[in-house]
Length: 587
Image (cartoon, rainbow, N blue to C red; front, side, top):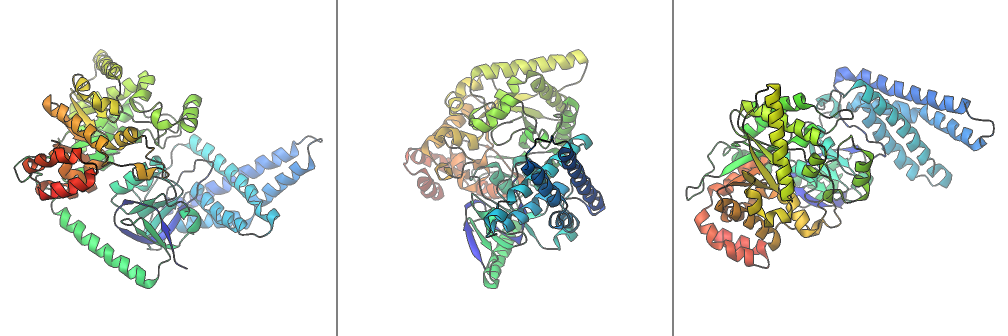
């Protein structure tokens, strides 16, 4: 039976493929694909984990005191029986052999299958046995996690064609953490569906950056969709069609072909200089997460990296964080890959929806009890870890000997933070001088993400060489909206007059003071805002490489003198979006 599931449209286009469910678990589960040569080893990992947990339970049972309740021994017997049940062990092995899932993913996928079967049972007693299965699986997952910590990070590879049977795949999950998105980014998924998330949650941002269709905030999607169901993701309408009819499938395939033709047409613009009709050059930069993203940025026609999100170097690590040398090598590789073009490295922006694997107890309480978007994150976190902060600054300064590098400091709100950052940078330089290590000169800039910083942009520009406007967080803080919460996602409004006035004010201040200014949030990569930002005086946009040609097309058709004449009317309007569409299109 075909059904439709509605959510939020966050990345345009159409994706068609078989569902791959990523089950949620109380245990943090790594999801990655293994190569054909690793399958036997992964099956052995699973077998060893099961045997180890069986041994643990048997030891617990043998060591039980005589006065222990009889029910406890019976419960351990049930868990031992479940561990050796073919529905769990053989079926989990099948996920590894046929789909090339790692052991943890295979186990959580089979748990999802079994959990649904228990939920459908009519007998209350049997239905409640689902909790026993969950407890057993989580014991095995914890053993695997401990073993992984001892053995080091796994080798992660893209899905082999044989593992999917040649069918395209669509990822379905309750939510996907940024760290997992980084892993999936280099795999073969043609689309994403999540139960939770808003239009600017990191799942949505990464889906847009990968230029693949996605629907988030689909509430019950991971419960209603079953493994291997055929799905159509309509990223324009925010609809997921489960097991579509042949007629519906053919209609969406036609739309897919039309999108591919349009993408190919835009691709021809990638190396055309971005100059407006009135001869104004515009800088189109790339946002990247890892050094390996740099070649794609060059290929897309980017004239530099406007945002290197360094926090992704710190993610997916269960042990120590990257040291100075490891960071230096990553930054150096990115600089070299950009072939002489400038690279702006943002200092680590940890917190909110990008937590570290390694957190202190106080930080864990902060993550799970308070609003993490308002807490110890970004520059606040860096200044609270001065040794780690200087380590990162030293690594960036060393990389600057290989090309033009700029440092970008996230979430600055107080002038004291600016002063402390500059002092830390000077201290890092002195430490390199004392050690006799070469380092280059860098410009340093601030991200304008907090309304207080936007209103006081002139003061901050006296301390910094440039500013970059992070529109995603600026909108979140200006409108008191948690951008990852689908319950209030409809209130997240980049067209809000207050948001636009904060952006216009910041750009005007920077231009008046002769300082550089760019926009690196989602608005930079959305062609709907290109004319308005040009009218404000913006001449530097930073976005994911896949968005550059779409924005460039708008730049090539724009006349900044005519656009500027309509700016004040748009900013004064009650409905800025309607005013912009009417006035800017006329210009």
